[in-house]
Image (cartoon, rainbow, N blue to C red; front, side, top):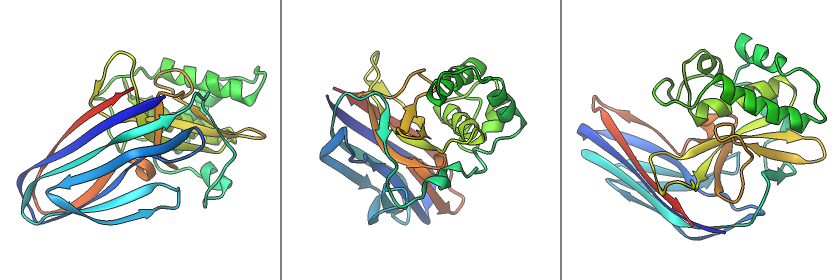
Length: 267
């Protein structure tokens, strides 16, 4: 399957910006099953691309400096990705980061009282660790319905479990925290998902991956209740959202920003 992506991120500032820097992780990863990026491009208005590099998680990173005095920054990326049918299995661990790194908790994925209780509630009557991981995924979405407006980018797994609703980022963080607590390396994934009922979207997607002996990494999309298939494009991975966020930045001055995202993913 070949998927086409058109993704625009637009920042409008209420006063001219003196200095701002944005870090982009918007270039899909090439891997077995996700081959070649046809004409993948990133274009910037209101700023300039300063640097491109690959980080310690194997993510492609672009650094963009906003023009001094700008009141708008527009980031457009587009291209085509060729994918083959797969069942969520990524396979053996690769890269510069040792596998044990993905057992390490972060502030967003620390297993507190609620996460530990969630994991304990699973019990032990499972044919395999993978079956237990799927049961965990189902339990999370049962406990925390997908609802926007109750959490933000800094909400931890513990805080999300105490909320009235959460989004894919929260579901992934809770799953990661619980899997690490159960002794399995786990990581966060940001990327794109082709939805069956719409072309226009207002955000990228996020899910999690856990590592199992003799198999390797397997993906779990908690929000949608299944493992990723050929509709999913993996873009960036890391210990949590902070490592894999599509766009993160900083700025000096009193200017306030308004963010608008336009996204199309289609076959």
